[in-house]
Amino acid sequence: MILLWGVEEAPLRLLRDGLEEIGATFLFLNHADLSRVHLEVEYSPRAAGVLEVNGTAYRLEAFRSVFVRPHDVSDLPDFVDREAASAGWRHAGALQSLLWSYADVADALVVNRPSAMLSNGSKPYQSRLIEKQGFEVPETLLTTDPEAVRRFRAAHADVIYKSISGTRSIVSRLNDGHDGRLEDVRWCPTQFQRYVDGIDYRVHVVGNWLVAARILSDAVDYRYGTTEMERCELPASVAGRCLALSQALRLPLAGIDLRQAADGRWFCFEVNPAPGFSAYGVEIGREIGHRIARLLAEHDERGCLGARREGTYRSWPK
Amino acid sequence: MILIVASRADDGAGRLSMELPRGSSVILTPLDLSRPGWRVNGRETSDSIAVAGGRTLESRGITGVVCLLPRVFAKELGHIKAEDRAYVADEMTAFLVFWLSSLDCPKLNSPTPGCLSGPIWSRERWLLEAASAGLPVTTLRRSTRAAADAECSSERHVTVTVTGRSCLGHEDPQLRERARRLASAAGVDLLSVQFRTDDTVGGFAGADQFPDVSQPGVAEAIWDFFQDAGRA
Image (cartoon, rainbow over all chains, first blue to last red; front, side, top):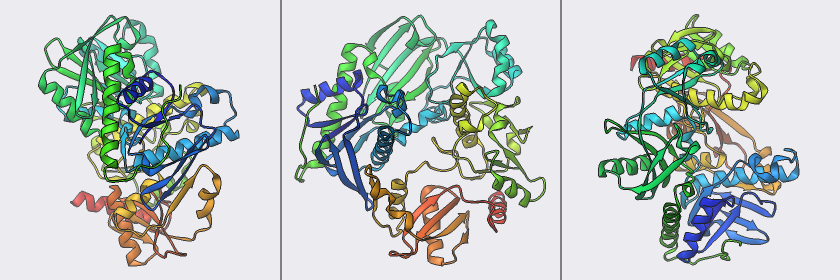
């Protein structure tokens, strides 16, 4: 059986469609509605226990594949206005904590393990892992020194700045208008990078399969501009590096941001461990959803060979 | 120079620094990340300039790191606008994960994504790793119905603190060996391991990579660790 943990949003809908197409059995645990969900786990040391959803009990051991795309409880609409000390909030927080720990050690295929998703929490840290797989990474400065930023810009002419952490930020070009604000870097180390001119590619890896989209955009950060996306083939060596990278980061599902510079070199900016794959066109999104569904289902079947299936199976709530 | 990364409110860090040979250590607090002078090349970090204790230092002059902070907490950033504190704390943490990991010197402990000192493991994961390392474990029960979780509060423990090859605390050689094995499995050189003393004597009860460094003998063990590492 397959466990999906997340909220009702486009990527999970595409995955649900994929699972229904192949007739897989799954349980959707809606992170936005956990009031009637309970979890009891015994670690001795392997995890065993019961997940109770709306009065129906499921053995945890029956979940051979788990898909994790949770949101922070405090960001969910039902909790934004609630008191953090309320019973509902505390229950949701406790459940999230227990599920998170379970997903990290579960004897199942987990897409993706929480601990594996953490490398994206520090972009320069992740960049060092990216470089080891043979991708280029632009010259980068992290500093609290306004003068150092000016020298870096003078050396590289075209420079962008972006967050260091996994917090989403709009990648922006540094220009003369920023000069007065440069003094603000004194308050917190800030990341600057040489701007690489070229064409963006978004690669999604699912297990040993990948799909690439070429992105034409008028913006420095294509997520915030007018864009056109088209499916494309990557050179075999680049595709191989993408697969090796997702494997090195222990991510069966990864969204990899590449740019091919005018001189032909391939730069990699980031590996997203919870990619919003529905944003890359209907056809690509559907195929990724289908591939994830197959990956989960194949592991579920392999894990269940020779074992009696337990639990009550239920499809996605309509 | 030994760099001690700690909260401003951590008196133990100050005591550790006092116990180490005079002039051999400096304390870096989150306030130092709000001081001008940091210059870190993202690709070649050996020539980085850091700020610690209010003054700049070259990263190549750092001979060891003791990190007593799991991350930078927003509540420690009173000098930052309230609405920006959570974001700045995340940025500072992400910066330190990168910079500390890039330093070519022995660390207590090396950072990992998610924690500035060692792995960010849940109780469940520690239990699993302890069992894999051959430590006796007892069943851990977790539940969203509170009762099961509260059951271990009355357990009695003894503690062994591993610092490199040294062990402090409980003197049972078997427990010390088990603590060393777990530290090795976790890839850390500074770790407190609690063992049960009730029903399962010597069974694994918990682990903490942020032991009290002001307890007797720890400063000496830390100094020895860096001296040994320097000779290796």
